[in-house]
Image (cartoon, rainbow, N blue to C red; front, top):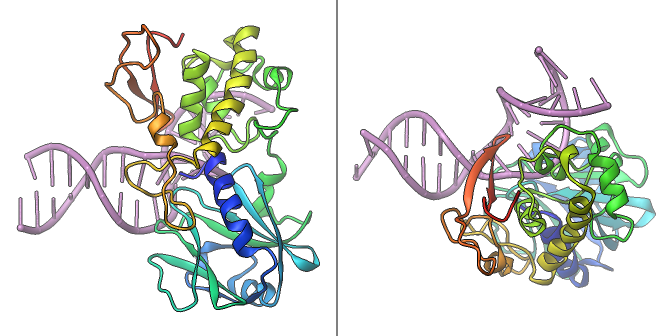
Length: 278
DNA sequence: CTTGTGTCCTGTAGGC
DNA sequence: TGCCTACAGGACACAA
């Protein structure tokens, strides 16, 4: 479930715990969690490296290492990162990075869909090709109406499916796309090319806005509790969701009597208000 | 190129 | 109570 706001929250919280520390040893507990290189080369390649910075690109968390290395994580749906005491056992742990100072960075992932890669910066393997094709960060200034209009123009796919396309708006997932479309007053199933200029202007603005709000509230922890902060705490943006997970509830917009509907779109649930979204 | 569908993966919720 | 199926969903492979 981690989308841009959740990954950014994890990045900010992990920074003081990781930067400047050295990875003494890496242990892969489940081989298929390593996307590149093969597990043994991964372990030896990580050992001895010092963590220099933490970056984020879309939903990827990038742990910068000395000598130009990068440890790239994708948490997919249920991945979790935490800094724990060296002797602490972690449920569903798939990889562990022992650090100087009796701590360890633990990568847990119950569904085993998440991945970690060890790469040399700017030399990304095929498994990470998607990272090179990624679109602009919606929370950066260059993501404006002109850019979004250019990406949506002439497209017949639904506007929601294009918001989920990382080549269009990286870091956006199911929750924040629904929330952004609600704030923009646009139905998720609208054909992207049918949006009027004013709607695209609104959408570009509220997409950045909802993602920044998500960061401000440390992300969205739904009832399943899958997304957690590195210290085990929860985010609080779920309290501020307008449509996601609110099927059957009344629309929150002042004076609107609409009832939130849920509908399938390309295999995933989509939430909207049939009254204020057109 | 574009669009839609199936697959991966496993814990959990719901039906009977 | 217990078994079984459907579902959750991000990214990618693949078909049309």
